[in-house]
Length: 369
Image 1 (tube, rainbow, N blue to C red):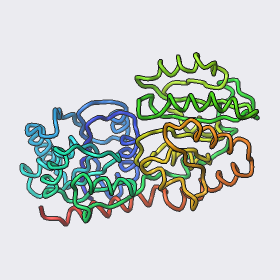
Image 2 (image 1 turned 90 degrees about the vertical axis):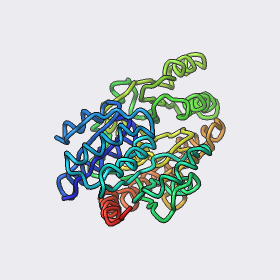
Image 3 (image 1 turned 180 degrees about the horizontal axis):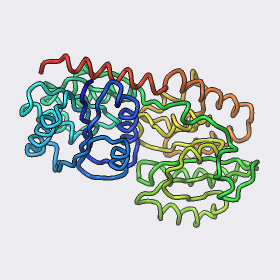
Image 4 (image 1 turned 120 degrees about the vertical axis):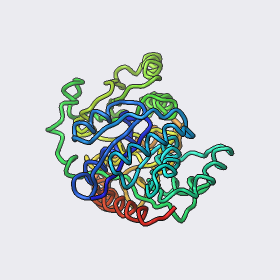
């Protein structure tokens, strides 16, 4: 069985951490003996320990931290690791440098972002690319950006994020969300569960909801789940716009399935997305989607999928018009619901992700760099 060290800088609760947890859950114990190391702790550490995965903390101060590279190499020797799978640029560089101290070690890097690097980073990427075995991009735009950032396209595989359909099955009767918020069954409920950070677009989303109250007679509630540095500012914006009835803040929640099942529509307003787990999970739970046409969202929401609508980022008119269209057209909403389930089964099913990722591991282990 292959021994894989999942190495991550910040072990928190975002989509990257969900990706790591998913791989450990569906590859661990069958094809992979999983191990885990991190720089900054968080919820993912707790979840790894809950799955009885060996865990170790390693300080990684910068991407060129040679001391950390030696510690990673020593840990790989202690655990007899075959391959490191890393997820942020900092630990990616450190893992590549660790190969100097641990000959025969292999490295796979998954890029979870669609963001351009600066000139200095592009230059260092080209230099580090000589040590790279295999890379994974979670969306097609992600692969394009990796190549633009200086990495060799021949070693980049596109593997979409994925979920387990069975885990998200069920119906609204299972949800307590509407009871919790005092919402009637005929209320149109939308959910956005992004962290309150600048690139998640909450401010323009709230402006969109104000306009939506002016262009539709359909009663609606937008449920905003999550925490983050801009949470209080968004609460003040809602109050200033008089949207207390239409917008409900519920904080960070672990019962995300409960939230999906109590909603009619999932909304993504982000500026930066690679391939959002939240969008795919919502679709697996049977929700249509309105999402910004950014990053890999077009790989999920498109005419072929028929699961929702794409909108222009930071455009309240585009967003509110799309929300109005789905709120006021029950047939379109039902078709998008069916399209969401069909698309997840076809393109974003968990066993496809697990098998394709393991094949990348095997390819990487055949490399001699």
